[in-house]
Length: 85
Image 1 (cartoon, rainbow, N blue to C red):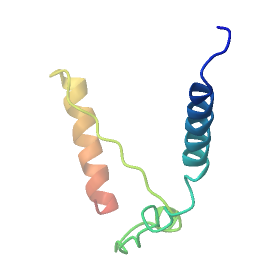
Image 2: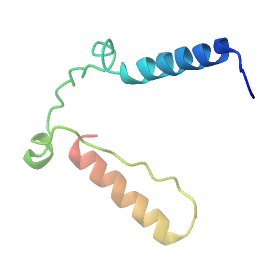
Image 3: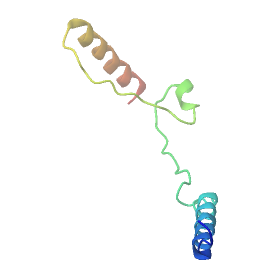
Image 4: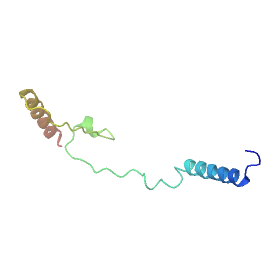
């Protein structure tokens, strides 16, 4: 387009600057929102688990109903109680 409107160029440049400024300012004011919360102390944990900073637990849904699955979940329940969870 010959002789294109300068407002299109100016608005495109302004929009690019706003998007760039918004994308680059992600960490400026968000320290309070993402701050680590204190984790309550859990009693009666084994030393190996108590020393870790973060503990991840996985939950397994019971899909089948055979004897192997029942034995597996029975053992995992006993282990959970043994760890104090």
